[in-house]
Length: 203
Image (cartoon, rainbow, N blue to C red; front, top):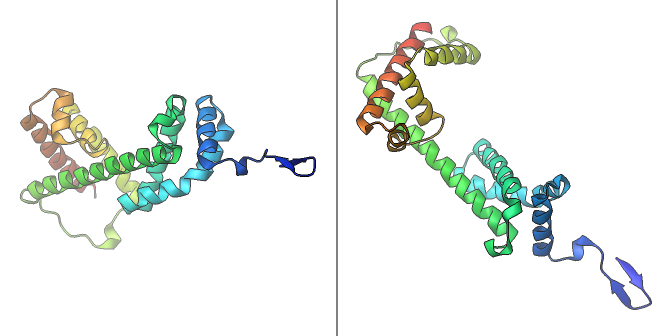
């Protein structure tokens, strides 16, 4: 700050401006494409938003991914932000909670789908136990899996990718593909069984 006369002071330091005003100004500047303002907002919000995401997901890596998505969303939506949406931090926390909950639901859906496929596959495919000395390393395994996926039919590959990588439910997949739910379930089940057989044949 600078002094005028003996007693009158004019505040010019950003630190003396209420946080909400600073944050609103930062969002307005981000909306105009100001990367420096984006960096400042990231420094102010990232710790709080990460903590909020971690409480929901209980997984550091997943929470970090969510925060990246949230700040990308802030960059994209800053131009349409208005104080009517709430305080900037409250708005950002809402975005974070929504993203984290969506991520948690997707993880849970993938887990349930995998369990379902495993239950059905266990009755038809027996896996021989392997000694650790015969296990291929993770890179080789990844290559085997990718090659196996490419050997599936287009319909099976499409359904499996939508379920496991996009986190869609079987109902959502059926809607997007405009196929009966039973057809989608069959594609996923048969695709997973074939994928499992292909991978095991190479291990």
